[in-house]
Length: 316
Image 1 (cartoon, rainbow, N blue to C red):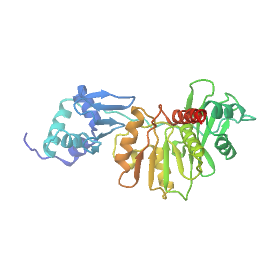
Image 2: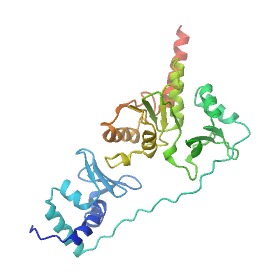
Image 3: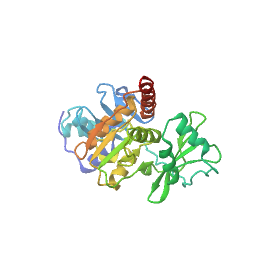
Image 4: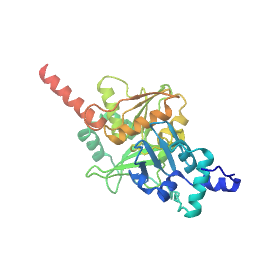
């Protein structure tokens, strides 16, 4: 391919074209949908595209533009890649993807009920979480029962101001972030004297792990804890900006953290999230994967632990 001179204005136009839009317009057969906004490459299954970015996990390389993609993945010479894209765009102008900014709503907590009886029964009897732990988080206004639907409401704070709430039904399989919630302030517990952070997909898993510690006669307040409010297995970029916002925010506010222990779900999403975050943060933190050994999540592990303890007592 001849190496024509690339004008500055032409180079600027080329750089605007994302790798995703290049493939979508000119090689759509190479994109395999893997979620609402996530795709992977037909010929390289560790090469993912999401929200205008791409990352090739097996090679540890990533970027945004089609130009970077052609040079890094397809092996083009820089000027050859520029000329190739210019020719394509002259023949057929690409249709570009617009990423709409999320609309934010004012955050107002659901109205509290007059008591917490139903949610205490749900958390302690069904989920087997220790009542002292539930009572503690109720006392600091991080857990309560909402008046209208009797949901468990888990609250996260920005300083002393509520900024996040997750609602879970105690009657059916309903769970949802409350309108206007900011995941930067997901449900957490902070101990500034500890350098260890335990990370979970859900608050119930976090409370379950605290319960396991208490059953082992350990102080459940000895560590830092964070709920991600769901796994984020669609991470595609190898930068700290692209890790789950709850974790990024917690680490920025708590510089004492040196070790991160992940207890994400024992499924593909949980395992992928742990692997990808390790790629991003392994140079700054000691990272351990403690995927539950029994069942899907830490609450399953707690219930298994309690059943095992009961069986052992029968034999003693």
